[in-house]
Figure 1 (cartoon, rainbow, N blue to C red):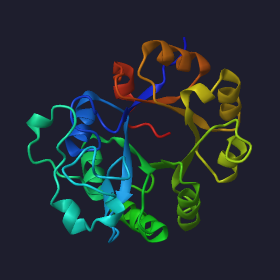
Figure 2: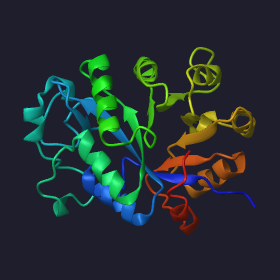
Figure 3: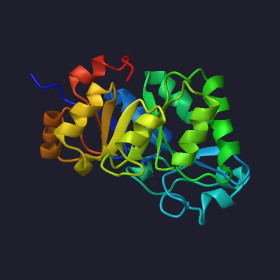
Figure 4: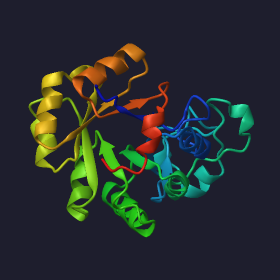
Length: 249
């Protein structure tokens, strides 16, 4: 029998609460997800927050790039757009530490995407300091299109689990690149994958993550390819997945 991929809540349970918010993590935990995928940015003074976009415009009452705003300014803002926003009238842009605390309540595996940083090395060092302080160094997984950030992260802590987001068919930053920097998994867009690539990854000891699958027919195709994990906004965890919450990658 073909095992189904484990489903990861993309930006938290974002169909029930605003994306990248504490309620979205809370609901994902209550729904039984194995993990949540969240986005990390930094303020001008190096405080880490959850935010997907380079600017605050789409999801908050703020304007402009998050990297140009101080933490004092960001802490005054409210998330004012997203699913069921009326239920969350005073929702703040969460700090990175708050996300770890919320994940720990449900033993959720956090997959953090490094997004927009005002000072890369300083902010990566802060990221590492926090996950060590919270005891998450063996629980967190970090992925990104920012390959320099991942390489710096790995140079500072070789035990940290990383996954560059790649097109495995690319010559420059493809499958061999992921292997060369010590990735624990292949992390790729759904339509870049096929069964041959997935089998090669498994042969090399790599798990396979793919994004973002919201249609059942795509989920079934990913399962047939042998994909291990998917990110989704609309596919919810099975009963079997709930039992896997304590399993590592």
